[in-house]
Length: 531
Image 1 (tube, rainbow, N blue to C red):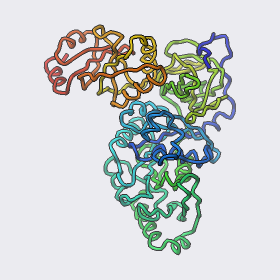
Image 2: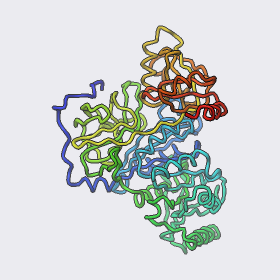
Image 3: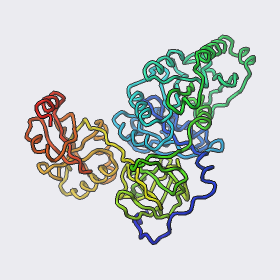
Image 4: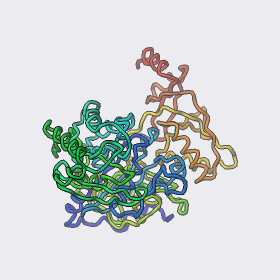
């Protein structure tokens, strides 16, 4: 697995697109799940894989001792805390479709990584806690989806636990984010007493039966309206009346409005019990868009039937301690990918071979022989690639870079032992290339004490943990007294550097950043030095 990635351009070139390319594109659905921490995102990820027969039994990240942790969370930190801080791509077939589910970090400190993932998907599932409703991280990620024109399917999760009323939750969605909810599957039974779902379109009742610990697919029983009324009584009547009220007010699914980001299909579910999970998959297959053209930096667009191209959205090392390799996850944008083909790296103009290409499910790896638009492929030992980079074959294309977030937390990084300085440098370069944190340097501090800049402080914990586990380097962090970062230029750098409470650094991509102690200092500088 250590074969270099770059080969001579005389090697095998890109294959011609097959006649069935359009059919393969139409079969694909690529989406991410967005939510506030602890809304059940990783549990839903496993439940979806379970229903697609990708795994045989689901674990729970918050399970008691002895119960499995979710297979999509592979870092020890993730297992210990029951959170996702990295992203994983899962691919499975369902109902004659190929589903690409890109799992995202749930914690707010890793919102920059989540943003990168959202550049690689065509739709999103917005997961909402039935008791808590719309939470800050959910709102932030929804705004990213809106900005990028990504249609959103809403799932009200944890309906097996006490929570708010369904109408109250839908009103909140409408009022706070201006998205009209259009229920497809309405709950029968209040939050905490989840009996089943009313299929609003078909008018039938789907009754669920619990399984031991929610570890296997919940059996479903389909009943017509009369049988449902006889079985559930007032609970069925209430569900019917509430759903009819919404339909009469115009809250019905409209595909054009959904794709335009004005409405959102709604499903009530319990990922922990595997209730409503089939319905989520069916909704994605029926309504989520297949891959489409992607804008390029030249102002045009790369159509899915054009020659091969892909965009790198995630780079990750340390996923497999047995291999010690580095994976670059790319989203195929156009054409057909075939393992071994030689493509061009747009940022350097150099040829790049794809000998080792994988799909990754937790720690499990499967070799990819070919892939189509919408698919996510991991390229092994792709040391030249970084998030936002473009690969292409034949006709040149370059996609817009992925913007960096403004960091708000800063820390000096030092190696505890000078004897391990080489390993320390390699570790810093690795974290930098993956985009785990931003690395800042200036002449005053030198290379031995780089400054880490992060959106959230937990990113520092990930850096320290990975430096120890992957490189054997004990590192310590020393907080730096700045709270804001702003871009500047070479003409302004000297004058800014003389200001109290300001220090200028160069980021590894060459961008100059001025770190400022606080917002009042920034306001003063903006007023006194407007240039």
